Length: 328
Image (tube, rainbow, N blue to C red; front, top):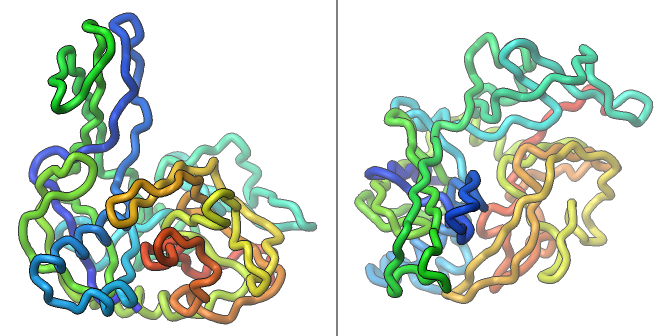
């Protein structure tokens, strides 16, 4: 389904999120930090560029443009990009462990109950490898970015405004490591060049190339059976309600899950601010009552919420098959 790998290399800092308004007596931590930009940001950019170039018919692009992400890669090996580690695998610096289903309950294989994951990402070529092998092969990594906060003691009325003259505003920018870039997937190409992207329209360098990683393409086309892991956030339910799994009569019942707390998500359509909702975080693991026997690209768009059009077009809940110990 996806044909192109679109990489984004920030030219300097990128915008992470706006912090809350603060008083001089209450300068605490980051507030509402959110990075990297969702795939919907790339979708909006592609539509904006095409409006100027008219390279593709508008109706064709609306019907067939699918994007997914965010991921990241090392500049020297973009095709072997990094995706979230499934939550059933816990990989720490000192030890590793794995969740398994035994007697309908989640249990740790090595009983290391206090083990916390130190790594959140794994290379796509290492998908399906055991936790110990992942660590020994150095196929795992932590975030390749860090937050840098900027405190604004005075704000122009054309940029930000505060009610009190002593009000302060905290901006959270993000600095990527020099050898890394953001990665997104797309069904349509984007010309190489400099663009304004995300948050406060910071300048980035964008490059587009065909997906040549055959292992990844095979994974994308491998049918999902009873177990799978999200590699992008999953937004399920209606425009008013958020759920942990698709709410459709033709989607099998979810009998078990491994996940983290939900993430706030908001999608803009045609410049309008969409309704806020919550997303199931990437890395979440699902166990279904019955096998689906079809890859994500063949999932019915009716299984996804609609915000102008089906959120499948912005990579909602993109997933790959994964093995869970104790599940046949």
